Amino acid sequence: MKKRWSALAAACAVLFTLAACESGAGGKKNDDEAKTKLGMAVYGTDTVSAEEASIDAVVAAVLTDKEGVILACKLDELQIKPTIAAGSLKDGGDYKTKGELGDAYGMKAGGAKQEWYQQAEAFCKYVIGKTANQVAGIETADGKATDADLSAGCTIAVTGFMKAVSMAAENAAEGNVAAADKLGIAVTAHRTGDASAPQYDAVFTAAAVGADGKLTGCVVDELQKTLTIENGGFKAESGDIKTKKQQGDAYSMKAASGIGLEWYEQVENLQNYLSGKTTADIDGVTLKDGKAADLASGCTIAVSGMLQNVQKAMKNAA
Image 1 (spheres, helix red, strand yellow):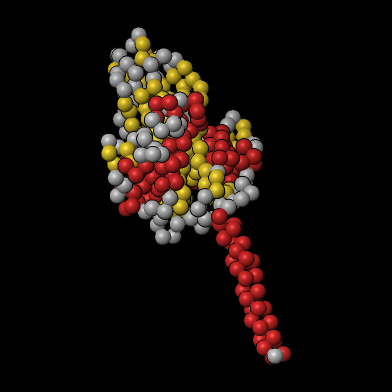
Image 2 (tube, helix red, strand yellow; image 1 turned 135 degrees about the horizontal axis):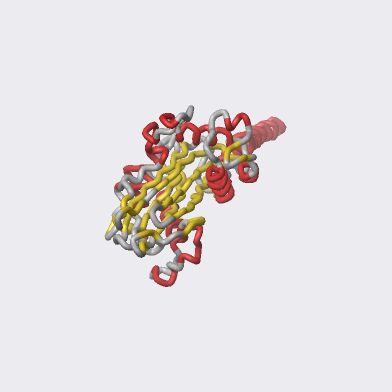
């Protein structure tokens, strides 16, 4: 009998040890991964005179730990510069971001040591290990960083970077994202509207991708800017441009949505729906008039452009 109790006690000890290991090192690792956060923010501004306009949108994507410390960062910037000459609107028609232009952006040709994308990468490396408040507190002079470590690789104005990255870190939310996931960013822009009121639309996406190529989390937002043309020129204005998510309930889609949901709420449903999918899976999403058939109860807006941009962000993930 004594031997039986000894054997039982030994077995219990083994089980207890295994359970402790599960909830110890292994459990803590899973807990830490579960608390990795994904965030994205767009800092949009415009400056419009009678003859020319500049629409700028800096987008930042970050992964942070549970304390809000940045683990990974990506940056890009969309800049559209329409002009009016002899009553005719011109904007080039190619709405590539500065990151997408790469060496063709031509900063080196102007005397800079590094191209725009290289300087943006240097800023991203610099903010690793920092919180939103620390990024917002980076010291600048005339918009440029004064810290020697940062200015060695980034000589361009960084105030837009600072605002976008700090907002992204503040907005970061938990989900299924892990610290080891690859982070991607994508922007797609186009022009709609008529000659008297051209409207520029841009979709922004941050995507976290696991080792298996599946989307572990994404953030989608859109920015719209309509320019008013009167008396042969633009109506002058300047200031910040809010994205649809930043407008929140003020975007006022709820009443017209048919499902009682605002734009940001519908996009959150889309983001959740896409989690766990590969780019091929997203290709297979059934659309009707640009809307996702499987999401009719939670998302009635057209999503075809968003889906394409999510795939683009996933392919850009590194």
